[in-house]
Length: 229
Image (tube, rainbow, N blue to C red; front, side, top):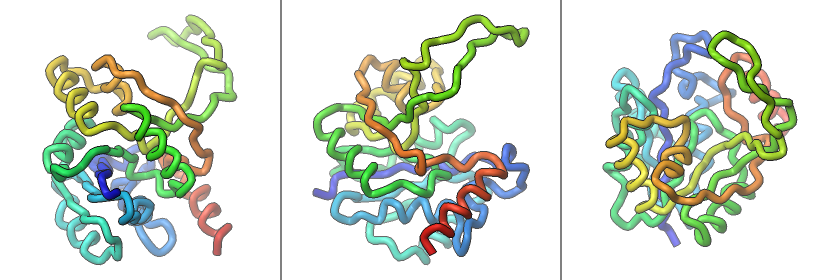
């Protein structure tokens, strides 16, 4: 059944990458990171639409880019906001009415596997909110504003959360309305859904589904691509 819409927020800057070009538009091999990410959702048996939020400076470029993509789901481009949550809010406003589930995925996670995608969809049919996560192996410290360690949480209870995060359409719409009302931005969509009181199901993530954030990540991504040439 084709009932999933995918939102890809791509309005961020490339500041941490040390680039004037926003991270999603950096080249990775023969295409941009964003193009690779979009192609992860070329699944017409399940994906109804792909909605991309970009800054006003990159609207024309992105609209031209998606016209050349050979993907079957409809691809829409909307203007992003000053914060990630507002970029997603703008995308939520154009989600097709027949959408039942909404997945939100980082624009710079271009290696989503079919296995993880299918696992998320299967879980979403049984739970109202599902996110993938990886067990934390490093010891984590909580610090104060002065840079001193306050405490050490039990890492057995910690998970590094990935995307896509999948929600029922009503669940994420309710979460965004409440978050905006309370002026709560959160750090991911799941944190907004938590605020609204909904339980979130965790499933195992994928180490290869990494986020390209720093310059070293580009090298890591290039090596990953070269493994399959």
